Structures are given as C-alpha cells and as structure tokens.
Image (cartoon, rainbow, N blue to C red; front, side):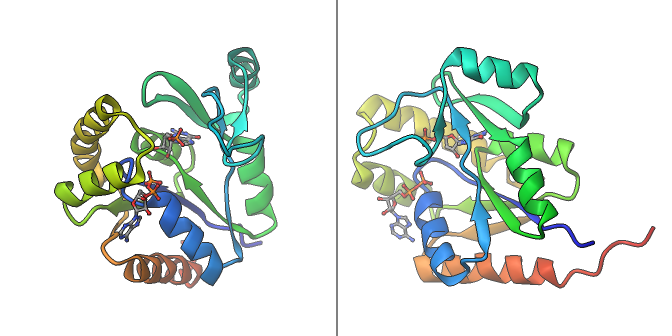
Length: 193
Ligand code: ADP
Ligand code: 5GP
C-alpha cells in the first residue's frame, strides 16, 4: 500500500514558513502539518496544541527515553523541540502526506531516520529582505534578531543537503512551487525492489 509522503520544510527564522504553509493549506487542504512538541514557554495568543504541544522538560525527557521522537533538538537559545514519531507514522499509514516545519538540523536528522523524506528548503530572496521581515514581524528583541541573522547564514549554507529549494519572494509563487513539488512527488513511480 502507498504510504503518505513525508515532507520537511525548513528555512531561516523569518523567511515565511508559517505564512507559506498557512497559504498552502488553503489551496491544498489534504496535507497535514505536524504539531511538534516544545519545552519553550507559551507566548501570548498561543494555547496547548497551537502551534505546539507544550511540555515540561521532564515530560519531554520521558518522551526522549521512550524513543517517541523522530528527531529532537535544542533550537534558538536552548529550548527543546521534537517531532512526534507516532503522529507521523499514523498519518503516513493512512496515506496522508505530512509536512514537518522544523529547523535545518532537524531536517537533516529526519533524513537519517526516514530515508524517503523529501526535504524542501525555503529561501529568502536576499539576506536584506530576511532582516526586513524579521523586523517587520516585531516578535524578537534586537539581540534575538542579530542572533537569528547570524544563524541564517549557517542555515543557508546547509541548502545542499536538501532536495528542493523554493524562494519565498512573492507568496503566491512560493505556494505554487511548494504545491508543484507535493503534486509531482505523488506521481513518482516507486523504486523497484
Ligand atoms: P517563519 O515562520 O519562517 O519564522 P513567518 O511566516 O513568521 O516566518 O514570516 C515572517 C514575516 O515575513 C511575517 O511578518 C510575514 O508576514 C512576512 N512574510 C512572509 N512571507 C512573505 C512574502 N512572501 N512577502 C513578504 N512578506 C512575507
Ligand atoms: P518558534 O519557537 O519561534 O516557534 O520556533 C523556533 C524554531 O523551532 C523554528 O525554526 C521551527 O522550525 C523549529 N522547530 C519547531 N518544531 C521543531 C521540531 O520538532 N524539531 C526541530 N528540530 N525544530 C523545530
């Protein structure tokens, strides 16, 4: 039986991952975006399950001990984030395509655990535009913006580990390209043997 495809969408903070995936779901509602787990504090407007499963460090560690994460990592200043393995497997088993919106190190780790994962790198049109978007979002302090821009350079250097790169220039074009990849991967002839 065909399994759903496993897509990973990564890219530097502020490139537009949330924005692009929200727009994608309007046009392609049959893909499922994974709610990952984190130990970071809830921000105003967030709630349990939106956009994360919020866990204490003890709860997170017991899931690590149960091997319940497909991958997990310290991201942006030491908080833990992890992809729940059971959710991914259950959805793929019922032929749903799933998307993981995780950082670049997470994407590379997923590829080691699931060799059939399809890794998509979301790129900014330029570093100047990335900086403009981070500032316009107004969710980080000046210090955090500086760290994220430094991280962005390292993350952009990891692009060769990814299968596809989509530039988030116009939102409409980025969504079209992402949909194109998802639809093309559904047409892939399974490898023999
Ligand atoms: P990420 O999830 O990658 O951190 P966001 O989706 O929060 O990024 O986007 C960061 C900022 O950039 C937001 O203010 C968003 O409205 C803006 N943005 C996203 N995509 C575009 C785009 N294609 N053109 C202009 N601004 C964009
Ligand atoms: P934020 O806390 O600002 O929402 O997200 C911080 C970063 O954590 C983002 O780059 C996001 O993609 C990443 N992230 C979210 N969930 C996971 C996960 O399960 N694993 C990894 N490796 N990164 C994640």
